[in-house]
Length: 154
Image (cartoon, rainbow, N blue to C red; front, side, top):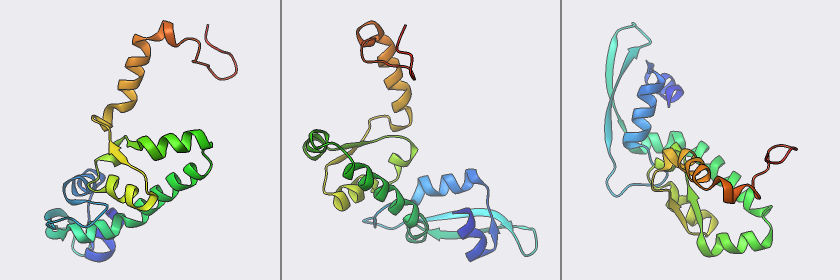
């Protein structure tokens, strides 16, 4: 997004602005109602502040190569998955976690392209922390399945 703004609009924006733009109007698939966002940054021609309106379509087109990479990485991982786990994925689906899970339509795009159900975790930004919290709550019963690198649990 930062590079697109520089190349297409000679406008310099920071990572926080790019993140806000992605979170506000970014999507992985066309929206029912496309949106616009007022982006403010520094004009690279004269160094002065400037604002422009950007469409969700343009942001989606900018994000598309990264989204395609994500889908392809999931596909490659699924191709190497043992048959039993592949069956579980086909039946129960995938759960998206992390910040990318918040991108509108990503779940639908992955589901359409890979033909598996996909849902977004209830709290995708906190999935790792929530999981570790549950693990610690059940630590004694989980000792047998926990293995640290090469040493086992003590």
